[in-house]
Image (cartoon, rainbow, N blue to C red; front, top):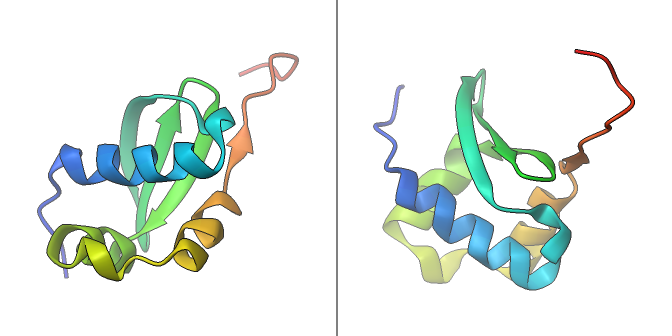
Length: 84
């Protein structure tokens, strides 16, 4: 099932994540991956599952701090020494 994504949902989740860890950085872009999206920020990347995006869109109050901590677990900081 393909969900139409509003970018503001990504911004909302990033704002909430930045409250827990400011090192997450600011939104740059996203791309679709198998079970959600990969979000590129100014400091790294995170993976947001479709279920979390849907939850933030329809019932943001139900996204618990534990859910946000799981998202933070997918954060991969940029490494300037890695060639592209």
